[in-house]
Length: 434
Image 1 (cartoon, rainbow, N blue to C red):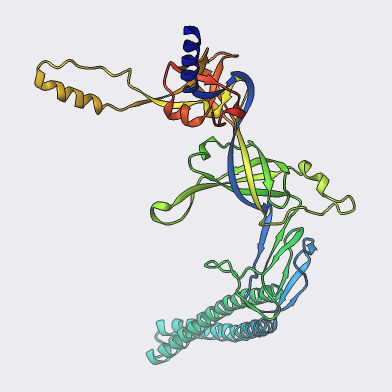
Image 2: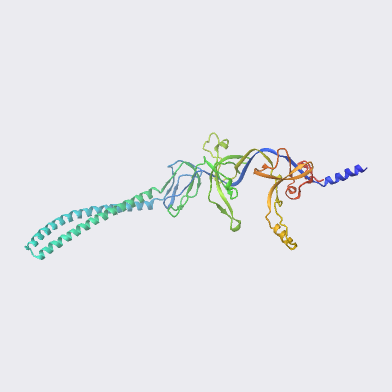
């Protein structure tokens, strides 16, 4: 009878124990990954803007058309540029005529200068011999100086005419280029991924202060990349050449492979004031081998992706092979106060001050797991490493094959205490009503 009472009491107490689920410490391969979202974009995406302003009178392509380098894309109304070209050509011809006229005057003035110079030198010799009067000599000298000044003036006029011809030539060249640029040609092979203008619209030309009106984009859809935003806390883990698994919303239950090709050094911020989120853009080129099956054999230039598609990328930053690991939820953090040094108060009135000063010491947060030991939860300090979505690496503190408590999480994180009696059950029965 007494034995039955003891068994009944033990059973009742056992039913009050915290029920837990456990799992063995095992060696696994762990791949740490960073998740980021973004858009699919071509690796090569050229924005086409005209060099000159005007009205679009012809568009030779449609969105989605494939083009080759040198193909004409758009024509802008050339009439105003034809007029400017003709005016510049007329101005050049006028300057050339002025130069010819100035050179003809130069020949006349050179002959006149030689004549007046001869008369001046002869009269000077006669004047020195007192043969002619001072008035005759002054007249010859004046005529000589006037002829010399006229010769210098016409030579300067010829130089000015030559400069004017050079300027007119430059203006004509610019007018010819402007007239040529009324036709916009494809700068590279690709596909028209975006057409932004319609026939009849006016566009602005590019300048040193403006990029001009974007009329279309030409993209090489054979090479695509995911442009994703990585949080500032994770960007330090991302390196060039990291492997990534990419999910595209248009293709459910499918992951594509990619390689990190570019990591931004400048941040982009979204939101306002204290709600700002700081991210860094990372570009991941998709490997064509991972989606070859989506390309029809009879359409080798077909691209299964479109610019702007939403995507989620998992960038694999670190890998550990054959390392001890446990489920992530098995590891918890607790404050450690064992390292504090208590100073004995010299006077009774100092005891309260000493206690207050101890409470101000910073807490040391450490990582722990609960090891299941024959119905007892043993709190044990561990050191963890990298983790994936399910498991975390254990660097020290556990041995392979040990049983660790993995659920319930509320007990592991708050309720469970060291050396507390627990009841081990299957995980499926953990939350069943007793």
